[in-house]
Image 1 (cartoon, rainbow, N blue to C red):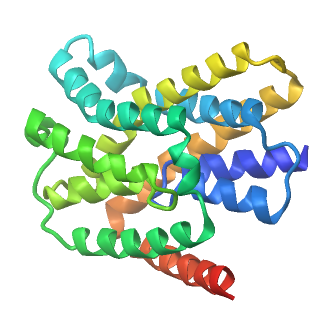
Image 2 (tube, helix red, strand yellow; image 1 turned 180 degrees about the vertical axis):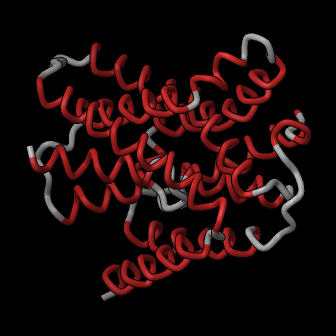
Length: 252
């Protein structure tokens, strides 16, 4: 029970902050030797985050019916990551880059990149400036998030800030793009669960979904409030300190 609550808490916070959810879940599972970290729980955690972003942005989602071009742009941004991600998972190549040294260096490098891009001008907004060209640019940039430690939300925000989008708009673009991605991850995971011989859905899955949903919802709300007033430096500092700590562990 405690393990599931910790994993739900970590998933809900790190999925939407620019600090990498996958690397945190990998590190926590390895260092704390969690026994409940399996495909079933992993899928449940992503379903919780998926429901949370749907719930928070339900007005924007309903607006897709009237603004189909925005829906098209969101889908364009999500497709490159889903295609390359599917290929890496199916071929097993993704496992070859999941190690402590990779996570340590990418945590620092992409934290510094976020710091640099966050200093750019605050001009563009999603309503007027989120073009098909910018959607494609952000979409291909997101492929880098398949490397553990990069952070999907972090690299999407970095790409949007590189294009001079305001912080809140950059975060909103990242969150909207996460909808089809989290949906695809959840469906893909459910498919693998159903095809496996050990498929089951217990109370622990419902607990993981609920607390991942709750934590994700709170994170989205207060992250958007925070970046209306402050820059992203606190997340950069966290990434650098975490990366330095991981380098120390990895090379000692």
